[in-house]
Image (cartoon, rainbow, N blue to C red; front, side):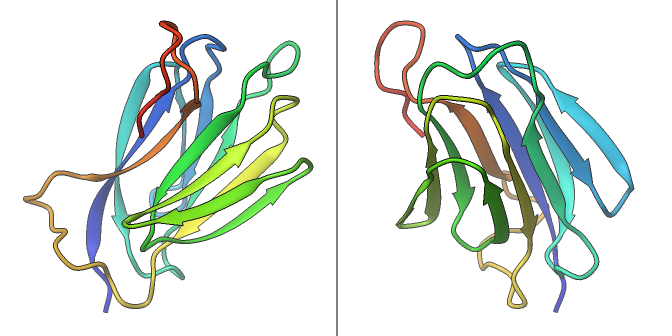
Length: 143
């Protein structure tokens, strides 16, 4: 059973100031999300009909700090990377920890066959957060 959810992709790159590229299959649109910005997509949980394809826009040089991709744990996804990745599942979230270096990865997020409970258009959107582990103030970034 398919269900429409709002998914917000948040770009929390503050020091690196990298953009995030998101292709939304349902409406055949591509979006560039600037650093410290967000965009909300209506997302169909039927993985065959809709998906988000997410990557970091290549910029000059490498990323200098470790960074995270934080996903809802109900999401199905394919992740490809040329570097070392640590994947952690913690409660309602799945965390991908990526090392410094070239941002050479891609994420394709689809919905599960069984939609998550407790989400509907009148609730706040679920979210995907991508950003540095350390903020400009030197404190640990909280996802």
